[in-house]
Amino acid sequence: MLERFLDQIGEVLHLCEDTDGILVVNREGIIEYHRISLNSYWCSQDTVGRHILELYPELDEESSTILQALRNGTASYNVLQDINNRRGERVLLESTTIPLVVDGRVECVVDSSKYHTIDQRIIRGGESGGLSTLDRILTQDPAMMALKSRIRDVAKLDSSVLIYGETGTGKELVAESLHSEGNRAGRPFVSQNCAAIPATLLESLFFGTEKGSYTGALTRKGLLEEADGGTLFLDEINSMDPALQAKLLKVLEEKKVRRLGGSRDILFDVRIVAAVNEKPRKLIQEGRLREDLYYRLGVIRLTLPPLRERLCDIAPLAGCFIDRYNRTMRRNVRGLSERALRMLRSYSWPGNVRELKNITEQISILEQERTVDALRLKEYLPVQNNTLPALTSNPESDHSFATEREILYKILFDMKKDMNDLKHLVYDIMQKEHTIKSEPEPSTSIVLRNLYETPQSEFLGQAPQKTISVEKNNHIEDTEAVVEESLSLEEKEKEMIVKALEKNHGKRKLAAQDLGISERTLYRKLKEYDIEI
Image 1 (cartoon, rainbow, N blue to C red):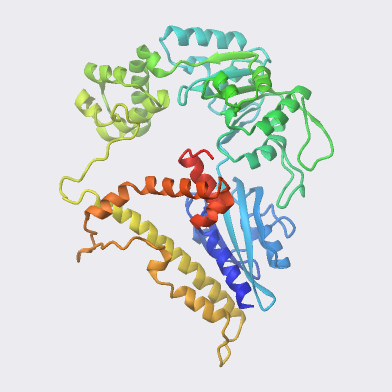
Image 2: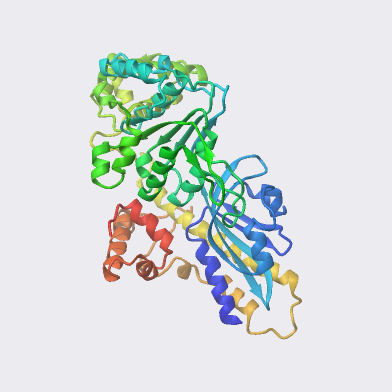
């Protein structure tokens, strides 16, 4: 009994490692506790005290993993759910749901979910939706003028289009213009960024689902059905798993789709516009883009030049953006001096037009009523040969690194507080259900009390024994050792991951166990640090 309960608590605490949101639901399905990092999505005051079906009215006792766990007492792991919440927002969840069972009865359920931003836009037939037209693509550059002319020529065709351009060059504007200038302008325009969601969710998004096709699945149209009669724009298609690329190729060839869990084929008529942000030949050679799909999509191929090759467009684009922000923010920035414009033209623009737009927005917010000269502009441009802005120190303090370190420690202490809140809540729910016996048993309550009393040093792990002095005003003093350790934190983490993988001959599961993290967290770290196995 005690060993099983410890295992359950261990699983629950393990959920806190890599999650966007934690829910604790009591036996009646009422939410007792809620922590979520995405406050724009739900706040705890919106959820605590409500039944889970109030938040997700599309669900029922069969499709809700939480209600299933309450009823059956069985856990479910990494279940994909594509649902609408009570605000009508479409939500993609990847949920792990664990029941806490005491004396053979489910006392509560802990649900941990990753929230995936779909990055999808659907403009129905007859809606303008702010789609771009060729007139809105501002340019004086000869190559861009020729590209606009070609877009106008091919817009009325139904042939698929492949757009290549670096990040921020305006690939979506081109896709929108192809739609709005063509014969399908009055039909749906559907845009989907393939890099925004994991491969496991893409298939259900593309092809749609029938209720019951997997746990939590509801009847839902796929992208190809949504775009029927119109245009489907697939951005960063090179991020799509090659196996899914093969399925997409087959569907495009046959012009019919079958939903996951469905039994009938659905015909569609869609123009495909796809985009990649790396050179197609390089992607094919590296196996990230299937060659047969490349030829299927690239009947018409359009290439967008980077901003560094469109120097004559920098001044008019910057002026256009400043004028727009002056209107929307009620500012009166008078523009850029000639020296400032020369500085813009000498910058390399790794983020292209998107980066220029971002910088002019910053200028519009902070400068308000002045002509921006080169000296002021320099504060907004990242240092050349380094895409990260330089850190500036506080001139009024000799402890320039203290603030950043305080933020780090605050995050760690907040994490501990969340963990302890979760432990206390589980204990309180159980106490409501059981009368405390006069003679305490060596079981649940003792285990939980021991968990509450876990020293802070144990929560933070076996950290190096370094002294950090604290002043009476609660500012953490700088020490050479702490600064050095903080600056090399990422390098140390990367080194530990590499050593663990080498020790376990590239086996991620064993390496994750050695590191004391989940396999999912290790996978995310491998991508973050670009570590190849």
